[in-house]
Image (cartoon, rainbow, N blue to C red; front, side):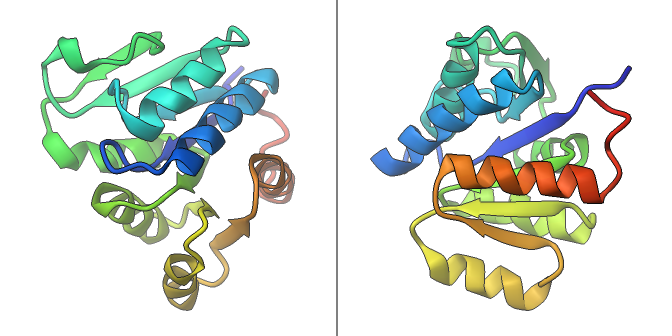
Length: 170
């Protein structure tokens, strides 16, 4: 049976402390649902924090890597997927996820959000920067959601999965 894959995207080097805390908690909550966590796979920022949170409760983590440099892989990634595609790997991130969570905002995250919306994927914004959400909401109001904390994001994920008939996935 196929598993639910939740993509957590967010800034690397420029991540705020609140983004890192939210990403860690999201990773834990996603893993507790027995869903697979997918990130950009590197050992910095939101990618590392989310993977660390998932591993803290023995979750399964996948990292879609931009290059062949395995020294930059998060030690919390179980399955590193080497793409050697640079930022083009962002398309793999969003197309492989059932739901995408933008945990903070950076240039790479913005590209992932845009790619997700273009692919008709649902995106949950978990950020203290509401103006970013407002911009994307104008582009695709039926695809974007706003969460004030990780628990609210999880509730939105469950609603999306139920409404979009993912009930046959575990």
